[in-house]
Length: 560
Image (tube, rainbow, N blue to C red):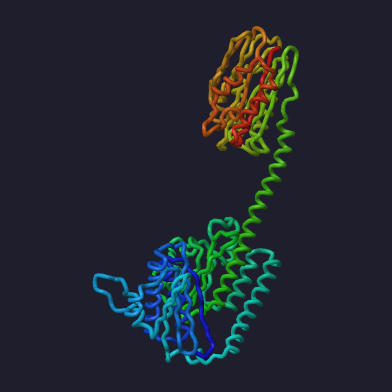
């Protein structure tokens, strides 16, 4: 054999499922050689039998092992080589590849191959077994057979030059394009020049930001993958390209069935497949040689990089905007919802702490005095988090400071606050739990009203304890809600605790710590310094190793 050699080499896992892709590549190679359909069919059958033997016998169906395949043409001779790590068939079968008995399939493949080709050769060594099949074809495409190495090199160089020019333009567009739409439009123009096609589609999955996906869809450069395209979904799932050269290969597929040939190439970035590039032809067979396939793959990769970068940029912009809004809201909260400055008086003092799960809190604690010198202190916990909850808490604080100027009873004060929130919230699905207490100037008693809040509890004198449960619903739900007050005599020193649920509804070892554990924790330390109690409580919560997802507010009012 003196002519130039042209061919392909593949290394694949030892899986029978690989045969379809190998048959497709081999058939394209043979078709390029100008072989008639009956010769192509013979070679595909030979490939199937030799590869199946390599998987089943040579590799014992172990998919971790690999099989090497190579097919070549030199002058008018086609050669197929298959190498596996096994020992090969018995020597008697190689020497006499006869048709086996009807009850046995052992040796059938060697018999078929021997009758499909002109010659077979077998080699064994320590690395494995090689089978080579050769067949002469006088009907090989004359143009191909006579093509010189120089002509081949010029064709390759021309294709490479066109591809490099397209990649240069595409790289420039990737840097200079103001939007990803501009880049994709340029990419589709360049792709038509290096891989001519009748139809092109870009399908992108759920990983792309919805706003970007809507922008691409409006520009008619991308769409979401149809769920009923089996071939497209196969590429998206496996990340392996798919091509076809006959209409029957994609029969029944809703997006491909009108085409005669084409390719689906996965679009990926950072190791993740999130889309597919589809090229198809209707009348003329698409050129799917290795150079063209590599070009399409590179375009798909660049499309993936550009699209994912644009999608990530939108995510970063949204996150940065949210952070800016939180910074503004946090600054507003510091001004609208400061912790009370009034924390002590004649015969009493208060300890207040607040930790937020986010930069903006919906919890708030307030202490103020009426015109008559009574002490009012309360705790509010707004449903929800973030900016809306903080604004509702600010609304409550304003309503409280206005309402205490009137001569309301404590129940009347709570009902006035409820009517105000109901009026302001209207149809908004928000509400706030609230506990409010009033202590007269002489500090002889305490009056407490609870609106849907966790209990208010405390201790008086040497050991008397009390707990005030809710007497009505949270504020902002029902304009006609009614509440009741409880009165406790303050004989001697006393401590009263108001908290929000973030201090006891947190998880440890997968279980909620709970109200009872919280109360036991506090009461076991009721004679300690209040700040030390708070520090111990924080340590217990922080040691749970599960991040807090709720605001935590703590108030301890103490009669000295």
